[in-house]
Length: 288
Image 1 (tube, rainbow, N blue to C red):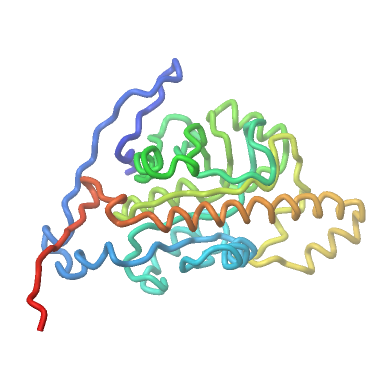
Image 2: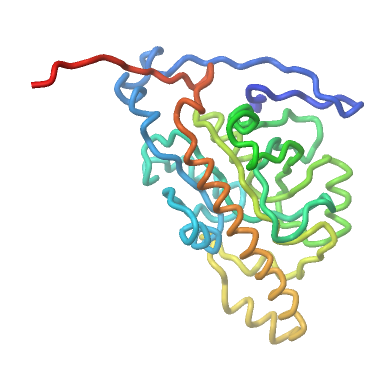
């Protein structure tokens, strides 16, 4: 069952946010489920970045320094990535970041820009929303990275039509759309890992993507060059659209990568909360 995170209010009909239940969990070590040493060392593990597409991962490797994994696109790929956590390069990341491209629903969000998401909305409108545990931290420690109004909604498929974008915006109030965010938030929350979402805008609210766009990427998140070439042979004018999207995507991923890397530099104490306590040890020793 989906439940809101700490510090998240549900929007009422007036658009204001009412407080919701604060969820408190004790460390798993206190419940006897894991080795206490694992729980203590958890905070020392580096953050992990998940990129749905290979292009996004390669862009991050250019500008960022954190461990990164390509999951493949879509909700099923994210679910599978969390189910195969033993294959992650980081055993217990102290923070997990979903990084990649998204489409804009709000006309204020220009192509080529990057945003740290504050709220993950439901496309059905009646399900609880998710907010990253980093929201209070971004308020206090990372104001330049914070976009206090940025919300995102997950779609079952890529939204290619400008009219569809407008309808989705009207129905959900979201600013951005992707195909992974809600599933990612739910999986990270269920795993008890603090999380964040950083998205670069590849196409603005008025941009209509090519109908073939969804076929350009395979299940592993890599570009299908033969599909792209076939589409260009059928419609040579498509090259102008693809070049523009490619240019905006590169710019957006550069800024998004810097933002994600900066979030990864937050100290474990900044990620501490009722749900994610931090154990500190102090002491002294006699020099020889």
